[in-house]
Length: 318
Image 1: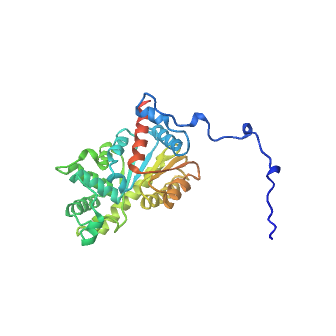
Image 2 (image 1 turned 30 degrees about the vertical axis):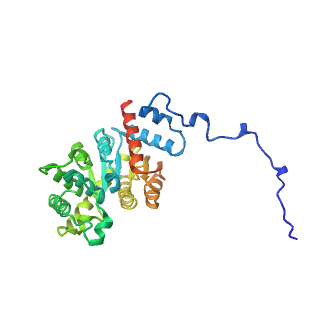
Image 3 (image 1 turned 60 degrees about the horizontal axis):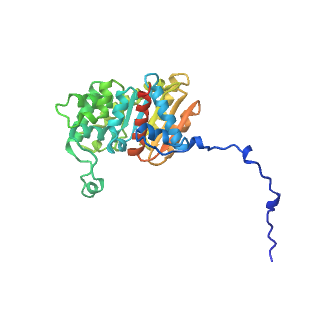
């Protein structure tokens, strides 16, 4: 028979609960709204714990940065196609976002909504017969805009904004983040990955002008990052690869030219699931020299309205 030994629990040393530091107390707990059904009551009712605490911190930091420090918003395509453009526009119009950086798909979804009043095709159905991404107007117009911009020495973002602004008819001007940035005169940059966007498979695509304009936008993003120093915010919303990689390289350019600055900013990744590059390239590595990194995970169509409404509430309370 095997001789099993057992720990003697009677010899364990316990401590009084009064001597134990607690992370949670009644002041931090959620509470029902009572008779007040306003957003403020809802916001104040959230527990001051974990993600809710981080969300509050981020909202305060964005509101505090408005008019004083840079706020760089980097968007993936899903953010636009799930209907969040009008909220991003409001943050631009209220002076919160000072630089709008889009990956290629975000720019396409925004362009299509503004110009044609619709976006987001059925990829599986189109892939089966080879029609996915083959729409005529989007490729023709966006490639023409980018080519015109390249000849004029513009970046891709500026070229698309200028094209939309002078287009004779727009189906939904009021939802476009590109146009909002143009109207507010803040930098808007587009960071394309050649071969990754539907306009690159169009007959009118020109790799030279795509490369020239998106490279110019990379330089423009790097030039904006010094405004983050000591209190700014960088938001990565819905880009798992492209924007985190672009941001990391633009940040090292900015620090190379700026004597190690910017530092002391808040870096937040908002996405439906956590990925390596946003966590490491946006949240962790850039804040090692000072600042704060936050990860907020959840559906864009729920999380971003919460954040936007909270920031606007903070601004209105000033």
